[in-house]
Amino acid sequence: TDRYAVFGNPIGHSKSPFIHRLFARNTAQALTYEAILAPVDGFAPALQRFFAEGGKGANVTVPFKEQAFALCDSMSEEARLAGAVNTLIRQADGSIRGENTDGLGLVADLEANLGSLTGKTVLLLGAGGAARGCILPLLNAGIGELCITNRTQSKADMLAGQFAGHGKVTAIAMPELNLAYDIIINSTSASLSNELPPVPARVVGSHSVCYDMMYGKETTAFNLWAKAQGAAQVMDGLGMLVGQAAKSFALWRGIEPETATVQQALRASLA
Ligand code: ATR
Image 1 (spheres, rainbow, N blue to C red):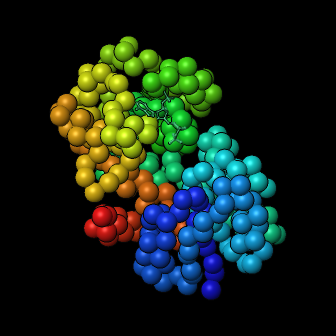
Image 2 (cartoon, protein in one colour; image 1 turned 45 degrees about the vertical axis):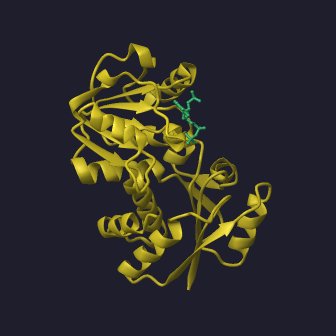
């Protein structure tokens, strides 16, 4: 039976085993998927052991995505530009290929709910690792324009500069944002502490779809705020989580699992 795992620290609350085991059942794939707690200073040896013991592929989560990026033999363009890897694939020749499916999962979730993203204006809140990982997939999905804004604006400027060659990407300081956007994505970790990024309410129009990469049993602080500003629709990051897992599963198994029922099952399991 082919063996897969997710590596992280902490890892106890990872939803990945739940998601991938459901995918495996639904697609009749014989595989095991476990959660592995790697020591903070011992990711590479833990991973090497896993592959030496026959592991076929792995997911990588906090805080190891940058280390995973560094130890791949080859990688996708998404991973290269994200500077981080969440999916590892052991290839036939024994080499390790890295992919980053986080942004692809976000785009898949947006498209499943909204249809084509062609021409949409997108405002991205935040300029950390989560923001970086979704920029190329959003541009490749055909969005019309991406604007990045961040509490520390210099980081948004830098990110916009790095992706300028890949599409229409700008950076605007939060107080200077004047337009409403079709899609507003909160990639900041503000929701973790129940805070809001200090973005002006005028970015939310009655047609806006607001997306918080965070999720929980209760509506996130950002999505509560977005609703109060009159957003047309709010979505949370549970769909992105299942979406990125589906992309990883497809890379490993060559079969794209259905995500809607898995999302429902995961939502129902939230404590
Ligand atoms: P991640 O990998 O999750 O993106 P990160 O790289 O540490 O984590 O980035 C966190 C992002 O959330 C940053 O854009 C950060 O803004 P700063 O660059 O100004 O630090 C943003 N962030 C975190 N807490 C925030 C808060 N309370 N309000 C606004 N932005 C916040």
